[in-house]
Image (cartoon, rainbow, N blue to C red; front, top):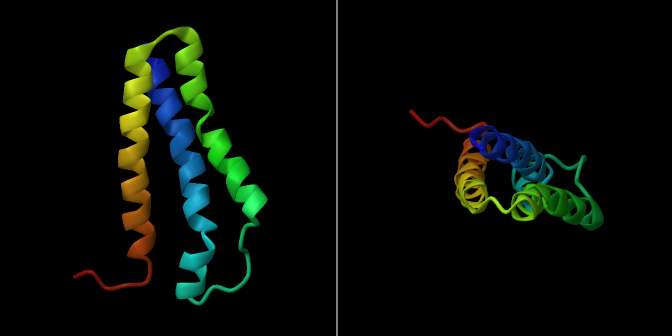
Length: 91
């Protein structure tokens, strides 16, 4: 059960990091013109990031689903903080 929770959060964290790296608004603001993701690709990645939730629901593991949900929220904030600090002196 714990392994399922950790595996689903890690899987979604990787997808969320890819979404953050390809965010067109962030790339424009940072002056990185090329490498933007298309809308279809971003939507596909968002859907893939939600697949672990379907696995938890299909297995009937409500605790794993809640851990995944909270973990994705926390990981999303950390990805936003990490990408927001790129190239800035925070000291």
